[in-house]
Amino acid sequence: MVKIYLGIGSNIEPEKNISAGLKSLETLFSNLDISPIYLAPSFGFEGDDFHNLVVCAETKLSINDVLYALRKIEFDHGRPEYAVKFAPRSLDIDLLLFGDYVGKIGGYNMPRSDIDKFDFVLRPLQDIAPDDLHPVNGKSFAELWQAMCTKIESQLELV
View 1 (cartoon, rainbow, N blue to C red):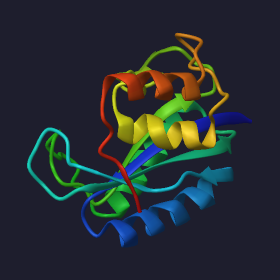
View 2 (view 1 turned 30 degrees about the vertical axis):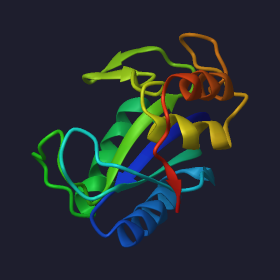
View 3 (view 1 turned 180 degrees about the vertical axis):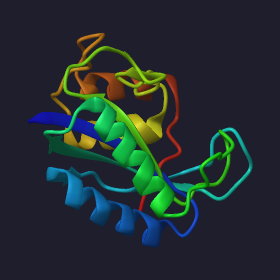
View 4 (view 1 turned 90 degrees about the vertical axis):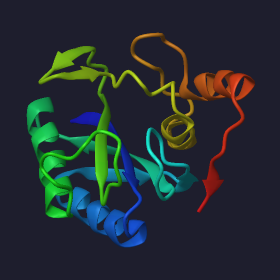
C-alpha cells in the first residue's frame, strides 16, 4: 500500500461537489483521513472563493492509475475535459504526494511543486500530516507551514 495525499478544491456548489467527490474517493482508496475545509480566495482569476482540503489515503494502484482515476472523478462531477487553467471548478483533485516518489510522470511533477507555495494546500496538509516530511527538502509539513506564516498573512478561513 502506498500513502497518497490529494489536494481538493471547489468553488461551484462546493458542499455538494466535495461531498460527492469524497464518496467517489472512498470507493477507490482506503483509510481516508480528511483535513478541515478552508475557504480561500480564488487564485489567478476573479471568482468565488474556493473550499479547499487535503485527503490522505492508501492505495494499491499505480501512480498512473491514480492520476487517471482522479481525472475521471473530476469529469464525473462536472469538470469540463478542456478546462482553462485559472477558472471556476466544480471539483479539482490534485495528487500532491505519492509515497516518497520523486520525479515526473505524465507531465506531473511528484511531489507537486506548489505544496509549499500556497496556504490553501499547505495548511490542510499540515493539519493531517504535521510530522510527515516533504520528500525533496526533508522538512516536516508543520515546519513548512510555520515558515510560510512568517512570509505571508494567510487569508484562509475555516469552514
